[in-house]
Image 1 (cartoon, rainbow, N blue to C red):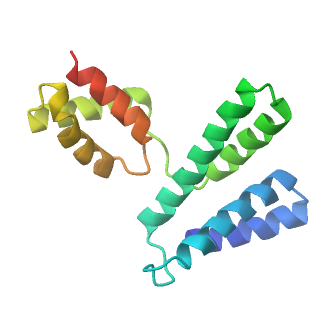
Image 2 (image 1 turned 90 degrees about the vertical axis):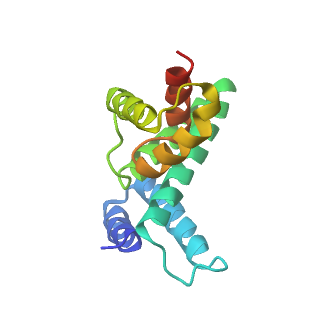
Amino acid sequence: MSLEQKIMVDLKTAMLAKDEVGLRSLRAIKAAILLAKTAEGVGGELKEEDEIKLLQKLVKQRKDSLEIFQQQNRNDLAIKEEEEIAVIEKFLPQQLSETELRTALQQIVSELGAVSISDLGKVMGTASKKFAGKADGKTISTIVKEILSK
């Protein structure tokens, strides 16, 4: 079942349950999918990795908004963003824990023979492909920089 089909099923369930948070979040995902499918060069279908990137983008947007709302003491809006993040993350693959990610990244660093921060691009290219959808790029970058600066 594609992401779009899962969203439609959950959207109907949320409508029947009168779940405002679910409806708001699922509608945002559906709109993003429709925009992505109608974008130039896509051909009307999204691959699974494109769907994951789309969901990650939606989560990142909401986390950025959440941070801003918290800085401005807008708890009402911050709560809405947190709720939407929770709903969207249900459709993402299980994220790696920091310990698992750190171990895997150290392995990649040793496999590539990276020794200094100048090797960051090489390590990030491999790590980003390997952990697509399973870890945030910012987290990967932070850990790789930490490992390479030792």
